[in-house]
Structures are given as C-alpha cells and as structure tokens.
Image 1 (cartoon, rainbow over the protein chains, first blue to last red):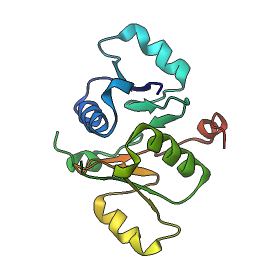
Image 2: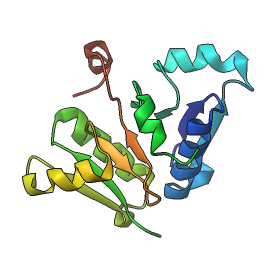
Image 3: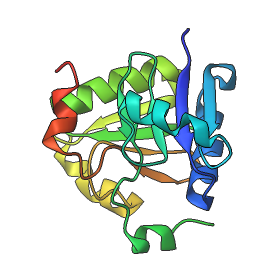
Length: 80
Length: 80
C-alpha cells in the first residue's frame, strides 16, 4: 500500500486530527508532515495541491482539506 | 475498534472520497451513509455535528468536514 500524507502545522486541531486518523489507518502508511517543524516542505505541500491544513493526501493524489473554512463554533465542540 | 462514519450524498466527489478513504482504512470499520438514499438519517447526521458533506466522524466523535468550502478549481484537478 502506498502512503497517505497528512500535512498540518501542529495546531491543537491538527494534532487531534492526526491522532484520530492514525487510529483509523495503518499508521505505517500515514506520513505526517508538521510544516511548522519542516518549513522547507511547505512548497512540496503547495505542489500537491494543499491549500489549508490539516490536509490529507491519499495515495492516489486526492487532496482532502479537513475542516477547511471551519468556524469557531465548530472548535467549541472539540476537546482541545 | 469502533466504527467511523462517512456521511455523503452520492455526489462524484463524495464517491471518490469514499473509495479513497475505504482504501486507507479497514472498511469493516467504516460505515458509509449516503443521505440521498437514506434521507431519514439527515437528522442523525446533523445531531452528530455534520454541517457539510462529505464528512467523516471518527469513533471518538471528531467531525472532519472534508473539503468544506471546496472551490470549483479544486474539482478541476479531480478525476470525476
């Protein structure tokens, strides 16, 4: 199985999303890239089509922007 | 492992998302609910916090709105 990539920036919502997705997938096949730690990879993320984070890129290249446009009241329901 | 739920409405983007997520997860633990076929479950989705579809709800109740606010130029890059 090819790897999926999760790009995020280490925000609370990002970390929760990483944890939840890792629990659903085979974590050996989930590459997590924290762009606030690996700033040199921001361009790579953009090249893949990432426009907001967190974003999951499937092995087939589908970019899933997770909670893009999230409202603050969405955050209220999340245990940050 | 508890189940994750994917709510969608059968749109092309929804179906691709379903296929891609199913390839990443143990599909025995992914419940897919097509609200255009099961309209009676719309209220259930809203109750879970779903505000747009497709949306993935993790076993811990985190609602991930997938590509909420997606722009038409995002669709252009997807093989529909």
